[in-house]
Image 1: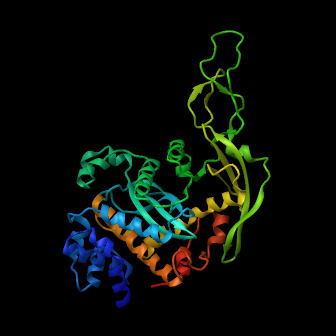
Image 2: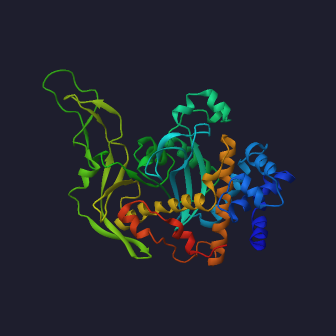
Image 3: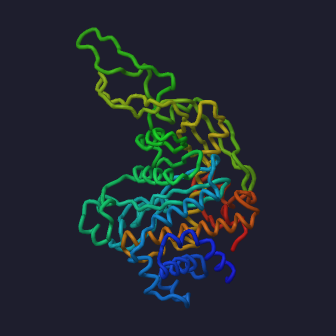
Length: 432
């Protein structure tokens, strides 16, 4: 206990410098040590009770109402994450995670779909950004999504102390783009952005990534209409009436599911898990997504034009019979196994979500304010980065840990949603 506390204080020096205050410089390590240390509950009161050097009032003031900015600590976290796992082979994974809550006073809480629960529940929903390499994740961003029931109620946002520049209605994909811009501005190195269909089905999200020159591989709805990559635009000749104002495609758009129905599906293994090779059947072809401008056709149908970018459409067939679909702007000569490996790399962020909740108390915060929630989330991410740093060091250095796999990774291909992640990636590395 003494040794890791000393190591933590040394590791936190770049973070503490950003606080520029003697008392805050003492509270920050104390709060993070409380998150890492023993005890089932990681809210302020029990953490303070377990630490004889601090009081509840001190810890609560630090996290909920102290006059300090999170920017310097966020910058230090990004720098540390980049040092640990950043590089051209790293993934930047966009997802969201839910924090179940009772009542309706905590900032952002509302009945909404919770992906981690697989159902609609009263909860807060946080957009997450994770940097990962070789199955070692480091979470670098957690930002609260505000439902319309909040953004339409100025009084409610004021009571929860939502900053004025955050009192706007943004979709989760829009929040994700803002977070990606933030980490890019800090110089975070990564090779490809990954996201599930909740983000990938948004045309503006994919287009925003492409405008930033980023490679991406994202989930896609099976109902998303797509065109063959060689689709052309024509002006059909009409026997009577005015000449058409817009081009129309010379092919008919079909759903992603139908586009790949007759393709050759191959069994692909993307890596080895604890129960053997992880494999599913995949198929892919080049397409153009129907996310261009929309106009009414002569027969009355409203049709979306082919997008300007040619991309990969990838299908996955699991042993259960479930099918998933994805899109990626990786180069046209990318091999199917590379596409499959990129798609499946996204699941490592689920491990980080669960570890932050079960071990570091991400969902234990009992305050109601925007500031308190985001500071608590930042502290949990810093604590998680410290643990990952120690595990990498114990395993032999930067990104050289043993093959890190979950006992449920094999089932993730079958069920699509890994569970019991206490046995997951980072837990195969040496512990504190």
